[in-house]
Length: 148
Image (cartoon, rainbow, N blue to C red; front, side, top):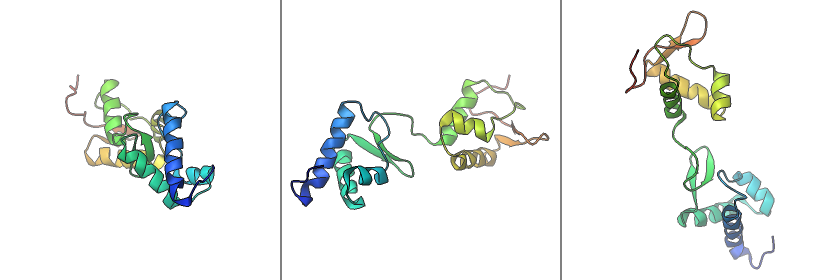
């Protein structure tokens, strides 16, 4: 990347990212900060300043622990809310087998750690529990769902 001045480098990076977003080359998640540092040959502070410019303009938004995304794209609700919606959509009943960790990882494209955290929250709410066959089972339905 040509650098007119070291002080303007972050503006050049923000403009480059803005163009990639406008052209659709970046449509949801931005590359990680480490990838941006490598791509543009700059430090974390410079990348951070470039991202702040785009955030201030409403072009991107950050999700703590997840990264930067094009504003208005994707579903960034907590995983536990997405899993509850899945239970509603699939019309589960009390006693049904709860999806495995592997199934949830693949379905939501998240880490096993994230899935385990969501499962712990659901267990804490009393919605799921370990069954006799070492598989989790539905113990209570989400609010707004009958138990027919």
